[in-house]
Length: 241
Image (cartoon, rainbow, N blue to C red; front, side, top):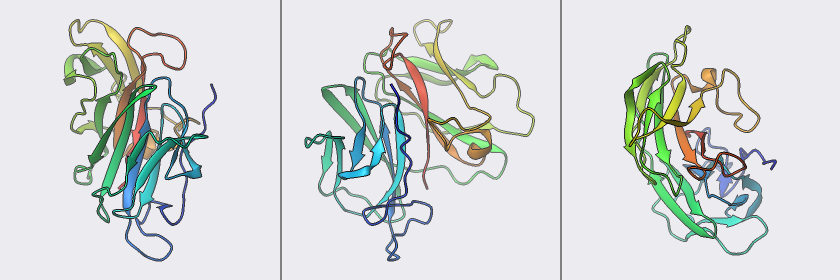
Protein backbone atom coordinates (compact mmCIF):
# COMPACT_ATOMS: atom_id res chain seq x y z
CA UNK A 1 0.00 0.00 0.00
CA UNK A 2 1.39 3.36 -0.97
CA UNK A 3 1.58 5.83 1.85
CA UNK A 4 1.68 9.61 1.85
CA UNK A 5 4.69 11.35 3.35
CA UNK A 6 3.49 13.13 6.45
CA UNK A 7 5.73 16.18 6.78
CA UNK A 8 4.04 19.51 6.22
CA UNK A 9 4.35 23.12 7.22
CA UNK A 10 0.92 24.38 8.25
CA UNK A 11 0.04 27.87 9.46
CA UNK A 12 -2.26 28.91 12.32
CA UNK A 13 -3.15 25.93 14.54
CA UNK A 14 -0.53 23.75 12.83
CA UNK A 15 2.56 25.57 11.56
CA UNK A 16 6.20 25.02 10.70
CA UNK A 17 8.11 23.97 13.78
CA UNK A 18 11.51 25.42 12.99
CA UNK A 19 11.08 28.59 15.07
CA UNK A 20 8.05 27.54 17.14
CA UNK A 21 6.18 30.74 16.26
CA UNK A 22 3.27 31.24 13.91
CA UNK A 23 2.98 33.96 11.29
CA UNK A 24 1.78 36.41 13.95
CA UNK A 25 4.81 35.77 16.15
CA UNK A 26 2.91 33.85 18.82
CA UNK A 27 4.97 31.17 20.61
CA UNK A 28 4.07 27.62 19.64
CA UNK A 29 4.70 24.11 20.96
CA UNK A 30 6.41 21.35 18.98
CA UNK A 31 4.21 18.36 18.21
CA UNK A 32 5.11 14.94 16.82
CA UNK A 33 2.53 12.34 15.77
CA UNK A 34 3.41 8.67 15.26
CA UNK A 35 0.73 6.53 13.60
CA UNK A 36 1.54 2.94 14.59
CA UNK A 37 -2.00 1.49 14.73
CA UNK A 38 -2.04 -2.05 13.37
CA UNK A 39 -4.61 -2.24 10.57
CA UNK A 40 -4.96 1.53 10.78
CA UNK A 41 -5.37 4.22 8.17
CA UNK A 42 -4.15 7.69 7.30
CA UNK A 43 -5.14 10.27 9.90
CA UNK A 44 -5.50 14.03 9.81
CA UNK A 45 -4.31 16.37 12.53
CA UNK A 46 -6.87 18.86 13.90
CA UNK A 47 -9.25 18.21 10.97
CA UNK A 48 -6.79 19.74 8.50
CA UNK A 49 -7.10 17.65 5.35
CA UNK A 50 -3.57 18.44 4.16
CA UNK A 51 -1.86 17.54 7.45
CA UNK A 52 -1.95 13.78 6.98
CA UNK A 53 -0.02 11.04 8.77
CA UNK A 54 -0.03 7.72 6.96
CA UNK A 55 0.20 4.30 8.66
CA UNK A 56 3.61 3.52 10.13
CA UNK A 57 4.83 7.05 9.62
CA UNK A 58 5.04 10.28 11.55
CA UNK A 59 4.39 13.98 11.26
CA UNK A 60 6.11 17.03 12.74
CA UNK A 61 4.05 20.12 13.49
CA UNK A 62 3.60 23.09 15.79
CA UNK A 63 0.46 23.71 17.81
CA UNK A 64 -1.00 26.58 19.78
CA UNK A 65 -0.38 25.97 23.50
CA UNK A 66 -3.52 24.73 25.20
CA UNK A 67 -5.48 24.40 21.97
CA UNK A 68 -7.49 21.25 21.32
CA UNK A 69 -5.77 18.29 19.66
CA UNK A 70 -7.91 16.00 17.54
CA UNK A 71 -6.67 13.09 15.43
CA UNK A 72 -9.26 11.67 13.04
CA UNK A 73 -9.04 9.01 10.31
CA UNK A 74 -9.10 10.73 6.94
CA UNK A 75 -12.65 10.61 5.59
CA UNK A 76 -14.20 9.94 9.00
CA UNK A 77 -15.81 12.18 11.61
CA UNK A 78 -15.04 9.90 14.58
CA UNK A 79 -11.76 10.88 16.28
CA UNK A 80 -9.16 8.36 17.32
CA UNK A 81 -7.84 10.90 19.81
CA UNK A 82 -9.44 14.04 21.22
CA UNK A 83 -8.10 16.28 23.97
CA UNK A 84 -10.02 19.58 24.13
CA UNK A 85 -7.67 21.15 26.69
CA UNK A 86 -4.20 19.60 26.52
CA UNK A 87 -1.62 20.80 29.03
CA UNK A 88 0.73 21.98 26.29
CA UNK A 89 3.12 24.87 26.90
CA UNK A 90 4.82 27.25 24.46
CA UNK A 91 8.34 26.26 23.35
CA UNK A 92 8.05 22.73 24.73
CA UNK A 93 7.76 19.61 22.58
CA UNK A 94 5.27 16.76 22.77
CA UNK A 95 4.77 13.41 21.04
CA UNK A 96 1.52 11.54 20.50
CA UNK A 97 2.00 7.84 19.79
CA UNK A 98 -1.09 6.17 18.30
CA UNK A 99 -1.06 2.40 18.77
CA UNK A 100 -3.25 -0.64 19.36
CA UNK A 101 -5.00 -2.72 16.72
CA UNK A 102 -7.96 -1.25 14.85
CA UNK A 103 -10.72 -0.76 15.83
CA UNK A 104 -9.23 -0.61 19.36
CA UNK A 105 -7.13 2.55 19.36
CA UNK A 106 -4.68 3.31 22.16
CA UNK A 107 -2.42 6.30 22.66
CA UNK A 108 0.52 7.66 24.62
CA UNK A 109 0.93 11.44 24.98
CA UNK A 110 4.39 12.42 26.16
CA UNK A 111 5.96 15.75 27.08
CA UNK A 112 9.49 15.50 25.77
CA UNK A 113 12.63 16.19 27.78
CA UNK A 114 15.31 15.85 25.14
CA UNK A 115 18.97 15.55 26.20
CA UNK A 116 21.13 18.64 26.05
CA UNK A 117 22.51 19.38 22.56
CA UNK A 118 25.27 17.01 21.61
CA UNK A 119 28.69 18.60 21.16
CA UNK A 120 30.25 15.75 19.18
CA UNK A 121 29.22 13.62 16.21
CA UNK A 122 26.57 11.81 18.22
CA UNK A 123 22.87 11.05 17.90
CA UNK A 124 20.45 10.15 20.65
CA UNK A 125 18.52 6.90 20.17
CA UNK A 126 15.51 5.59 22.05
CA UNK A 127 13.01 2.80 21.36
CA UNK A 128 9.29 2.44 21.91
CA UNK A 129 7.52 -0.89 21.50
CA UNK A 130 4.15 -0.33 19.79
CA UNK A 131 3.55 -3.91 18.63
CA UNK A 132 0.36 -4.86 20.54
CA UNK A 133 1.06 -8.60 20.71
CA UNK A 134 4.79 -8.25 21.30
CA UNK A 135 6.63 -10.06 24.03
CA UNK A 136 9.42 -8.03 25.72
CA UNK A 137 12.40 -7.38 23.47
CA UNK A 138 16.06 -6.41 23.78
CA UNK A 139 17.79 -3.96 21.45
CA UNK A 140 21.41 -4.44 20.43
CA UNK A 141 23.75 -2.89 17.88
CA UNK A 142 24.78 -5.41 15.23
CA UNK A 143 28.40 -4.44 15.87
CA UNK A 144 28.07 -5.37 19.55
CA UNK A 145 25.30 -7.94 19.64
CA UNK A 146 26.25 -9.37 23.02
CA UNK A 147 25.45 -6.14 24.86
CA UNK A 148 21.96 -4.74 25.24
CA UNK A 149 21.51 -1.12 24.32
CA UNK A 150 18.02 -1.51 25.85
CA UNK A 151 16.58 -4.54 27.63
CA UNK A 152 13.12 -6.01 28.26
CA UNK A 153 11.17 -3.36 26.35
CA UNK A 154 7.52 -4.37 26.66
CA UNK A 155 4.47 -3.13 24.74
CA UNK A 156 3.92 0.64 25.16
CA UNK A 157 7.22 0.99 27.02
CA UNK A 158 9.53 3.81 25.92
CA UNK A 159 13.22 3.96 26.79
CA UNK A 160 15.40 6.95 27.59
CA UNK A 161 17.72 8.32 24.91
CA UNK A 162 21.21 6.88 24.70
CA UNK A 163 24.10 8.43 22.73
CA UNK A 164 25.38 6.62 19.64
CA UNK A 165 28.54 7.69 17.79
CA UNK A 166 28.13 9.12 14.28
CA UNK A 167 31.72 9.91 13.36
CA UNK A 168 33.04 10.31 9.82
CA UNK A 169 34.18 6.67 9.83
CA UNK A 170 31.31 4.52 11.07
CA UNK A 171 32.10 0.95 12.23
CA UNK A 172 30.24 -1.75 10.32
CA UNK A 173 26.97 -2.64 11.99
CA UNK A 174 27.04 0.15 14.56
CA UNK A 175 23.99 1.82 13.00
CA UNK A 176 21.98 -1.39 12.65
CA UNK A 177 19.79 -1.88 15.70
CA UNK A 178 18.62 -5.44 16.23
CA UNK A 179 15.34 -6.28 17.97
CA UNK A 180 15.83 -9.54 19.86
CA UNK A 181 13.52 -11.70 21.92
CA UNK A 182 14.22 -11.00 25.59
CA UNK A 183 13.32 -14.63 26.35
CA UNK A 184 15.73 -15.91 23.69
CA UNK A 185 18.34 -13.21 22.94
CA UNK A 186 19.90 -15.30 20.17
CA UNK A 187 16.75 -14.71 18.08
CA UNK A 188 16.74 -11.52 15.99
CA UNK A 189 13.10 -10.65 15.28
CA UNK A 190 13.70 -7.57 13.13
CA UNK A 191 16.11 -4.65 12.82
CA UNK A 192 16.49 -1.01 11.82
CA UNK A 193 19.44 0.49 9.94
CA UNK A 194 19.93 4.25 9.81
CA UNK A 195 20.21 5.01 6.06
CA UNK A 196 23.08 6.89 4.45
CA UNK A 197 20.57 8.95 2.45
CA UNK A 198 16.93 9.83 3.26
CA UNK A 199 14.32 7.37 2.04
CA UNK A 200 11.14 8.61 0.36
CA UNK A 201 8.93 7.43 3.23
CA UNK A 202 11.12 9.12 5.85
CA UNK A 203 12.73 12.15 4.19
CA UNK A 204 13.96 13.74 7.46
CA UNK A 205 16.07 10.73 8.54
CA UNK A 206 19.61 9.85 7.45
CA UNK A 207 23.11 9.62 8.91
CA UNK A 208 23.89 13.25 8.09
CA UNK A 209 20.51 14.53 9.30
CA UNK A 210 20.73 12.72 12.64
CA UNK A 211 24.11 14.04 13.77
CA UNK A 212 23.63 16.08 16.97
CA UNK A 213 19.93 15.11 17.01
CA UNK A 214 17.57 12.51 18.47
CA UNK A 215 15.62 9.70 16.85
CA UNK A 216 12.97 7.28 18.09
CA UNK A 217 12.94 3.75 16.68
CA UNK A 218 9.34 2.50 16.74
CA UNK A 219 8.64 -1.23 16.88
CA UNK A 220 5.47 -1.82 14.87
CA UNK A 221 3.15 -4.46 13.45
CA UNK A 222 2.33 -7.88 14.85
CA UNK A 223 4.98 -10.18 16.22
CA UNK A 224 4.93 -13.39 14.19
CA UNK A 225 3.64 -11.65 11.06
CA UNK A 226 6.33 -11.56 8.37
CA UNK A 227 4.53 -10.22 5.29
CA UNK A 228 2.17 -7.40 4.44
CA UNK A 229 1.73 -3.91 5.83
CA UNK A 230 1.33 -5.16 9.41
CA UNK A 231 4.48 -7.28 9.46
CA UNK A 232 6.57 -7.01 12.61
CA UNK A 233 9.24 -4.40 12.00
CA UNK A 234 10.54 -0.92 12.80
CA UNK A 235 10.37 2.63 11.52
CA UNK A 236 11.99 5.94 12.56
CA UNK A 237 10.55 9.14 14.01
CA UNK A 238 12.82 12.18 13.98
CA UNK A 239 12.45 14.61 16.87
CA UNK A 240 11.22 18.19 16.78
CA UNK A 241 12.61 20.80 19.16
